[in-house]
Figure 1 (spheres, rainbow, N blue to C red):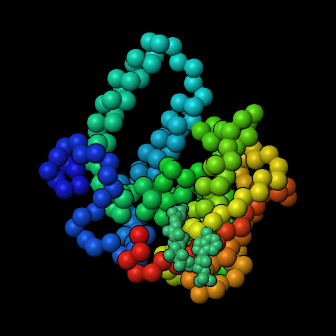
Figure 2: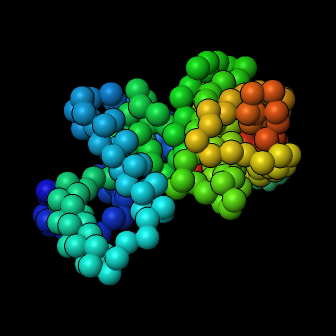
Length: 220
Ligand SMILES: CCCCCCCCCC(=O)SCCNC(=O)CCNC(=O)[C@H](O)C(C)(C)COP(=O)(O)OP(=O)(O)OC[C@H]1O[C@@H](n2cnc3c(N)ncnc32)[C@H](O)[C@@H]1OP(=O)(O)O
């Protein structure tokens, strides 16, 4: 059944029409660790493995034909259970790496407080930039999400990125557990200045500084 229960194959709109929007990221994130059941995390890992394998594969024409048929079946099953962004397990399952959100590189949070976050992130073949190094855009994605989390925890408010500057200091390897540490630089009214590092052991791979803005009520 689709979001409104009227169509079996509604487009992926993410719209939520039955409730007024309270801000860029809803104040009630409708966090749950139950959605999708106890094996949902395993499902997400299979999807991530698929993304890695699709990126790495050189299939024959016959295999491509076969895969298209199989994926058509899988996509139809998922289309039949589409739901809005607020209630989807992907993004709200805080018990899973990166909240079960396949848009993000998988990370595990070790510490999260109002002064910063420490996490371990691992880039895989899907995140390849070139020559076995991570793509810079995915490094930025990891920083953006973990700094967004940092800003939210420091203020208790819904925030959005105003700017994010990333300096790539050395090669960021794939298939290696990297540590990300974030901190609050200063708070000025609605402005949250933040910073972060990403390291492979002691080696600095990348660092970031950013400004997040606490949204006003109703701000998109
Ligand atoms: C636990 C869950 C964790 C979830 C984490 C998710 C993280 C993901 C975060 C994102 O990726 S958000 C998506 C990317 N960002 C956007 O799409 C934001 C698009 N831009 C906007 O919506 C607005 O420009 C913004 C909300 C950032 C600011 O607009 P406002 O109208 O609210 O603020 P305003 O323009 O009045 O500026 C407020 C203050 O910030 C300053 N400011 C705003 N943008 C700035 C900028 N870019 N650079 C420097 N200063 C800036 C501005 O000068 C001013 O300073 P003062 O108060 O001192 O006068």
